[in-house]
Length: 114
Image 1 (cartoon, helix red, strand yellow):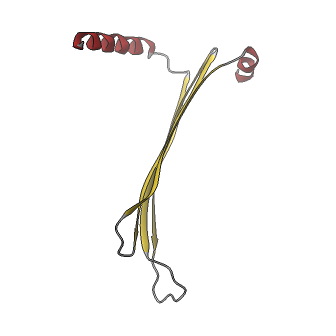
Image 2 (image 1 turned 180 degrees about the horizontal axis):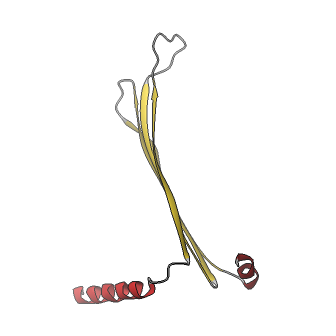
Image 3 (image 1 turned 90 degrees about the vertical axis):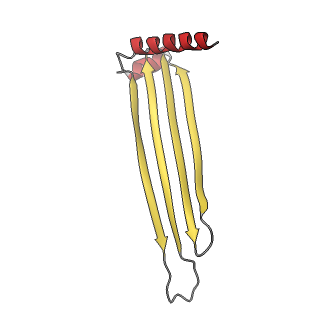
């Protein structure tokens, strides 16, 4: 079983390496951000709680378009924490969105892309 897996891995790596020369059909991009927020009240009679939060966001895409095939891939990740008064730290954001959409391009759409 181990030999079969090793052989399959080698063949797969060879195919990727052989086809990795031309990357003009791929478009990629992304964004990463870290947001911090602090709320502090002193001598405030209307109410409210002191808090501090940190949130990290990551978004990336990798799209492929060639001849009759288009393939759009994206991922959005988010995670954050909030600390309110003397309460324990809690999670305030938890997001994982993965989008993968392969399509065939029709002749009329292919002319519009060129």
